[in-house]
Length: 161
Image (cartoon, rainbow, N blue to C red; front, side, top):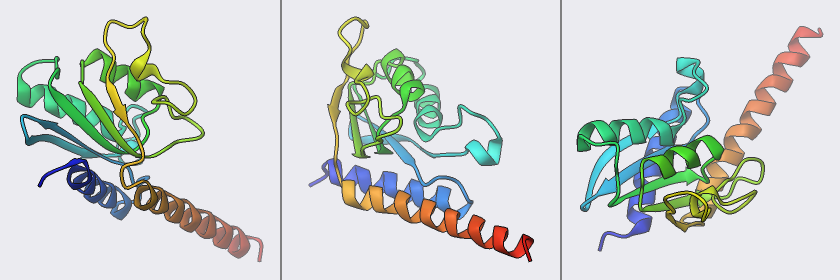
């Protein structure tokens, strides 16, 4: 049976692709009518674009494939809780459901810092499900940032010699 964990595993595969190219390992999948219509991963460093978040890139691809900016029957799966920018794009694209893996204590806007996806003053609210494969998603990010800190520390030690 295909369920939220199945699609989150596809998002995790996207996140792994990001990590392979030195990007923060965040992946996103958009599903509509039981089909994956978009997949993306973070490309901020590669593209040097502040808006190259996995969710934004996936939404853009999904709109092109759907032939519409409205993704009313779609579900977005993302490995990290959406930030304010991505939550805004989700609301504007009218995405029906958002399923995320790890919470983001520094920037999460799907329930952690605030919940822009269910803000009643907007003209659209999305159903939000958090914590799907949370440990796996969170561990991937923790490992990435630990390795990054170690690398920076080693570079600092070499330059001070």
